[in-house]
Amino acid sequence: MGTETITRTIKGHLFKVFSIIFLVGLFTIVLDSDIRSNVRSLIQPSYRVILAVALADLDGSGTKYQVLKVKTNEGLFLEVYGRGSGKLPAPTLLASTKLPDRKDGYFTFNGEVTNLAIDDIDNDKKPEILATTFDGDLVAHLNVYRYVPGDKELELVHLH
Image (cartoon, rainbow, N blue to C red; front, top):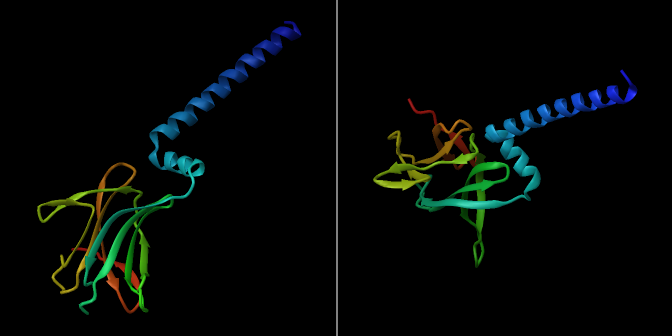
């Protein structure tokens, strides 16, 4: 075999190998939503979108707190805001937690479709924050949190 034939054979094999690697990578990105989200976050600038807002007395004091469900390029978050002080009180962030899944979900609550609700579901006289999400396999999850005012945090509630 001549040098030209060997060079052409090597180039042909390299082209096939790189084509296979490219196709495997492409299928992985297309089929795996987590990888697709990570690639998208590298390309897209950071963002913040408020998906839902709910008002409720979370600690029994009569104070209405504002609960937000927020989507950012880092994932889904629950945030609790209270009133600030002064003549024009701006809302103050009191607690925030990242939800375990990246996709927002909806559920039917008291006959209404929603993605954020507040209710006392374990009958302890303290309202819980209910937020649905979907994991990478599109399995729905109901995430239940309780606002702990002393610690200024959202505590995950485990239902029995």
